[in-house]
Length: 275
Length: 265
Image (cartoon, rainbow over all chains, first blue to last red; front, side, top):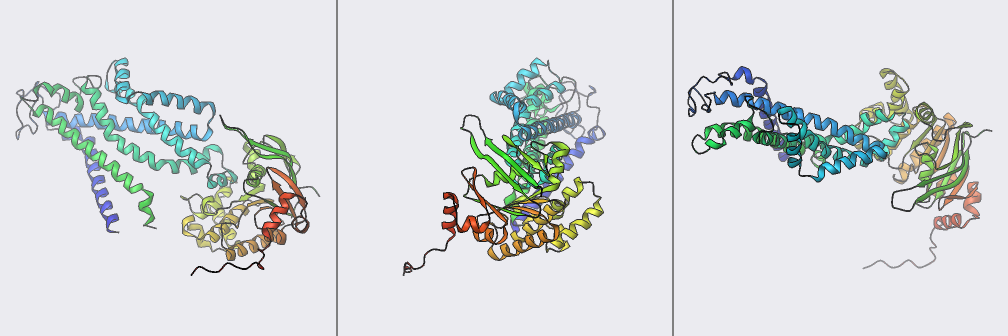
């Protein structure tokens, strides 16, 4: 029981931290002490009480830029994860339940996508779409949905032959009713865990594309592109790269640990002792 | 008298890519009459459960036809299939696995009622009534399958099967996962419900003693085919086919005139 309580406390703490992070992200424009795009300060000032994270080479307040950049990064990552979760789950459930030619075609597409290293394929696609944040999100979506489709399909295949699904058919449920009422709730657990763990990973990948100049374009504040802009000053003015890097580290850590917490929370072996 | 359900030369073949096809049921013809309890016996893997699933229209036969009240229902879809399922219900071997673990027993029992257009209040009342008829209290509607015993869950499964007022219930080894005392209670309940409602049953079981006591007629299946049909006394007392003979032999108590091996020290 003590173990269970400790997990609950940790999970609650992480949920609180994630909620705080999201609140900061939502209120970023209001929390900014200065205009993030105004080039009005002395360039490359070290951190001080006036500028908590210093200023960059164009004389912009870095703390304000980190806040707004975090908003850009977190919002586009969440949009990306929601998009691939919904699309991948819908495709996977449909393929697993109905099978047939559509299943064969979808799984062949998945196999092709999974055959490439994801970031390399995303790079190629983002370059093909000619850069930009929305294009980077689209490129990552194209390479990331197959994982969800595969996972959901295998779960659906396992559950659809169960006796309770046959019983639900006998109760007069139509195909879509069966999917929504009985199959989807059973496949959702692993999907939620994967999606929560993926928020951190996707944030890194999106920042990676921006770092390489294929994501957010200047003057949009985005953590990856800010780090890219500061990389030449790592030895002379390290705060220019450490401010967005630190923010990235904190956000990714929170989402990763939250993903672990969700997995522990949904682990059936843990729930056995609660019955 | 017209049969409730008639199977005419029904076959089912499962084929998988790259593997030889499996003939699960071959050219089986059978009828179930109103108020009749038809027994189906046979070794494991001889196609009994597949036949039950074909009869319930959960599987589509490869060839042959299925008639419900004289009307063809082979390969029924949509509304026609729902009408079949209103009249033909099934009770599964493993009661706990036959209920969605994430939903209460009440939800499971009331699901067919919801699909038939009952309001929430009507549904709750009817679920309570069904549970009580199957010997369970109304409070069982709020319990989950893992919170009740196997016997209680099987009673709830019977309540679910009765919910849509069917004419035929297919019982796929309904007592084999239960202890002997619970088996007896479930069988008594089945007999009582059959008397009250004039239901027909297709009873699949390994238990020949049970078949002899409750069935009006028995079918013996062997290697995907029906090899013998007749009254239980005839089929199990004077079996004509080797398969029935094997089953009857296996059911006879061991000859205890042989000395029992001594216990190990």
